[in-house]
Length: 134
Image 1 (spheres, rainbow, N blue to C red):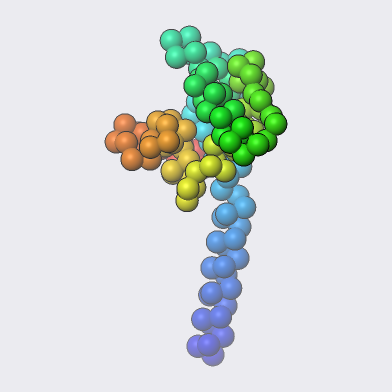
Image 2: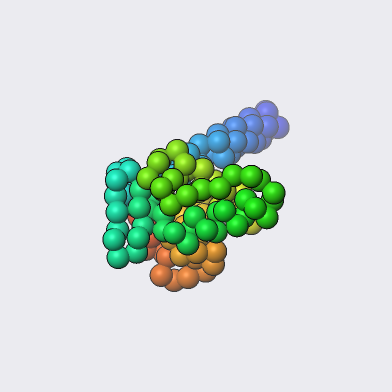
């Protein structure tokens, strides 16, 4: 009976863990979109030139294009692409794919603070806002 209980618990853990992995990334993106712009694709922070639902700055577009070129992927994003939700999410995914050990927290904090954002004290408050939306 004990063996059955242990196997059942492990099976439930593995099933729950697997579902969490599948669920976490789309929810993370939606949580970040909510924190950044409340979903407004026309959002524009003039002082930072951050635009769109993910509030992408020009430096992020350059970084995404650099990463794609490094992998010989012939795709190039423009500053105008920041206004498009689908293309903004694609850019987020490029960053995600180039992130070592991408947890939700690390991805969110890096999105807010750059490649080492997960190490910066200043991104903890941002992570709390994102986490509240997950």
